[in-house]
Amino acid sequence: MLGLIEKLFGADTTQPDLPAGFAEDRVAAAALLVEAALSDGSFGANERQVIAGILGRHFDLPPKLADRLLEEAEAAARDAVEWHGFTRVVKEATSHEERVDLIELLWEVALADEELHDYEASLIRRLCGLLYVTGRESAEARNRARERLAMPPPAQQ
Image 1 (tube, helix red, strand yellow):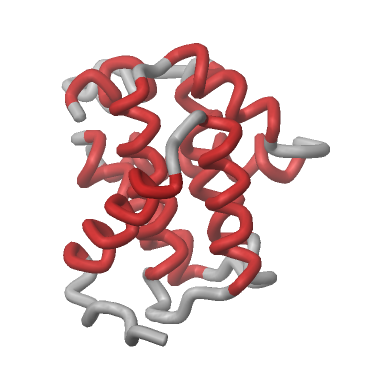
Image 2 (cartoon, one colour; image 1 turned 135 degrees about the horizontal axis):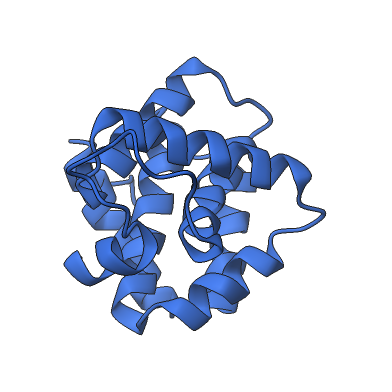
């Protein structure tokens, strides 16, 4: 996970007021988290707080940098015509393991409201294909996200 921190969010965290902005590959990963939150049709303060917390916790960013990155990611997602460009940037800048880690973070965003919408699951499936993450790796990432959120296992159908 440390490699992902360095590649995607390599800002100097000892001086949180200095970075003028994040590189394209850093914003792309965060923008995908924003896209996951937007996919169910709502992106409110709760989802924003969840993503900022994820950015801070998983990437060891102080709150000001996590908020700043989230703002850049929101702007990038708002200005983007489609999210394929984000996946291309992430795929080129990260290892396979780091992309699986990103899928886990996407599942955490999608499951944060304790309700998985079809649009969220569909988006993550499509992102897996574009990031070359297998269905099995995605399922394992989803289970890890559920455990982190202290959610019970899904009911078997």
